[in-house]
Each structure stands twice: as structure tokens, then as C-alpha cells.
Amino acid sequence: MSAKHGSLLWPELGVWLALLALVAISFVCAFLPLGAFNSVISYGVAIVKTALVVWIFMHMKSSPPLIRIAGAASLFWFFVLFALTWADFLTRL
Image (tube, rainbow, N blue to C red):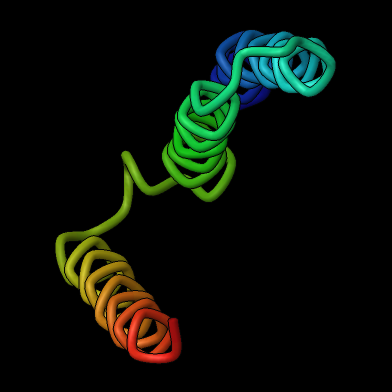
């Protein structure tokens, strides 16, 4: 039992190091004058970090299908609310 648990530590350590690298990229990107690409890079890094946390640390890759469906439904609902908020913002310009 402990051998299996120990083998699961290496992927999580690798993801943690990847998250640290992505934080460093975010930090460096904040100080570079890239214009509109600053936002694009920042959003891309944020999406990758979120995907890594959900997939590895929240154990979504080994979850039952119903849990994955609930996660996808919550993500869909988030995008609906984001779109409605964005539509409201655009009407106020």
C-alpha cells in the first residue's frame, strides 16, 4: 500500500514544479512591455495552472464519470455567467 502511495508523489511533485515555473512566467510577464500580449499570456498561463490543479491535485483524472460531468457542468455554468457579465459590461460602454 505504501509503495503505491509513494509512486503517486512524483507526478504531484512534477506538477508542483510546473506550477512554480508558471508562476515565474506570470511574474516575468507582468514586467515585460508586451502590450496586448500581456493579457493573452497571463490568461493562457492561468488556464494552464487551473487545468493542472484540477486534473492532478483535485484527482479529476481518476474520478468517476459523474464527478467529471459535475465538474464540466460547473465550468459551463461559469462561462455562462462570465458571458452574461461581459454582455452587461459591453452595454455600459
